[in-house]
Image (tube, rainbow, N blue to C red; front, side):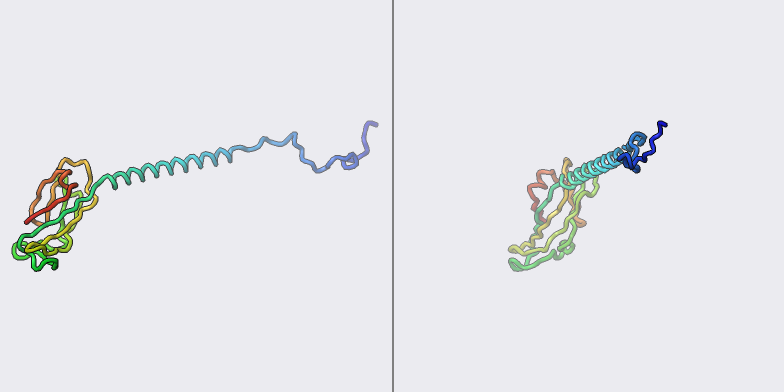
Length: 163
């Protein structure tokens, strides 16, 4: 007699309502995985930025040498293009200028520009980029002419070479 002949729908209850009392706990591991992936990506990006800064510093921790080479009595008329002649026949536009460190290791290379007559002389401008700092002295070799030694201050002030 204690039975209730009414159905849950007749009692106003939703017969398909979820049973929240027996629901398992919510999974939180996907959130922690996402946080972990984000942390790894952040550290990778930070490491890449640091490496990039080191490369930038190495690449920009240098200087440029400018100067000219004058060949005496090798010019033609003022302002005309000229080249080395006779005993300076190996001195032409494009002749390499090699900068080396104290151990003789090549650290930078430049070339002579186009020679221009100034009076009876022929003057070749040159630029040598990316000469690394922190050397006590540098060797400078022009073609096959031997090596001369210069201080960093001399190179930074610009060179005026004569043959």
